Length: 521
Ligand SMILES: Cc1cc2nc3c(=O)[nH]c(=O)nc-3n(C[C@H](O)[C@H](O)[C@H](O)COP(=O)(O)OP(=O)(O)OC[C@H]3O[C@@H](n4cnc5c(N)ncnc54)[C@H](O)[C@@H]3O)c2cc1C
Image 1 (cartoon, protein in one colour):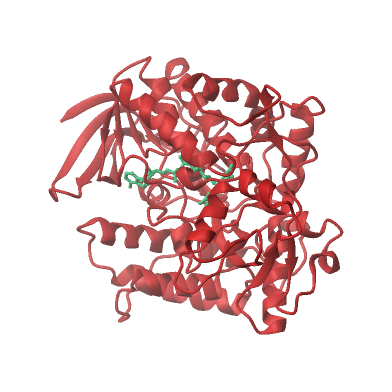
Image 2 (cartoon, protein in one colour; image 1 turned 90 degrees about the vertical axis):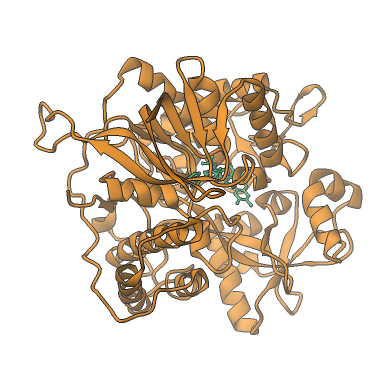
């Protein structure tokens, strides 16, 4: 078996950044299931948050992060995020990420629910593409081995020593099993440190801003191996994705509303001030629900985002990617309103880690969107996700040197998914799964719909044949993630952050806690 000090699964910002730091300390293998740049990162538009402006401070950024998370942000994780932000931005600049500047200083945009301008961007709205291309080319120059079109399919475990003060046995990682999509061959790789940087699960939903690769693999792999998974009921829906017939939902960044874009309904009426005093700059869940309600009221599948009153030159300079994408599809946004609707966007939950990126399995780390570090709580503050990836990737590598083989304390009160009942149901298609999740476990949920989804998902899981190729592995992992989201959403009988239940529309004190899953050994 080939052996490495570090195996990193995923080549988005979290995986590449971790790989670039880890190569200073040992041998590194990056495994990624598509081409190196196939990931959520390259689609990120608005930017990366960091409190580096003259009127800003880590404390202000911390306060905004805590406020956005609706009571469930881990204060220590938020402190780490905001205090270490400036140093990680310096690292990205050193690697060559070309952040936009104004008068010789890094330009900072303001986004919804941020109390100061603090969002760095590159190439206007092409921030993610610039970050991804920069890091992947530095990784290539550094000679890091990247296995493309290779899907991690199982975490290989060894028994570990008993914990000194805990009755839970410490499991330990010994490597990872991976499938080469091009040859169909499965290979086991050994490592001392396995870092999951596999991104989110946006493909759970019919309407999603996430590319095809976002199938929650890492979360499902970790869950099967016995790692804890937390906060899965909190899925962020972005309010404004382009809605054109036959065109993939394409994100129209928050920053467009930040620059003065307004939302109009099918009758041309500006409606957000009726829903929230912050109008278009209200938190995403409020804007998404308002749009949904307006679409239902006017019987349409979209509303409009209007920037025609802004200077054309500003729109084109600030949002070149959006302008170009829309123009390529016959829409000149400087002259015409943009049809938009909400879309699934960001997986707040994921593999539970401590502030060092450690999971409850020794040697298994998670960072980036697949991880749940606690910085987002029930709702992510825009542009904190790119920041989170680099903050915790750095900490993972640091930890492998300071305390190799350590693990996070297991959570008290973790539960397992109920057993999947064997059923006659035929295995689902990805499309059927996405429709079920969109209709029953979407922006507005209720107990009846969630119970229906729970039954279907359990039946589907029991009827899936053993996966043999990338699509069948992805489907099996999506079904596991769908079950984790649905079970948690059904248990959480309240509305909080991005989780909205029409049968429990208010937050409830007794739910001021996390739902954590851990598979029974
Ligand atoms: C349209 C869009 C716009 C966004 N805009 C912003 C923004 O402006 N600001 C912000 O902060 N955030 C934004 N986000 C969110 C942000 O882009 C992501 O949270 C972040 O890029 C995640 O990085 P990551 O490295 O964790 O995951 P990803 O970039 O998704 O990378 C995951 C990697 O893992 C690989 N992988 C997955 N499973 C396996 C497996 N089993 N085996 C091998 N490889 C695997 C994938 O192929 C991929 O390479 C946006 C997201 C989208 C979709």
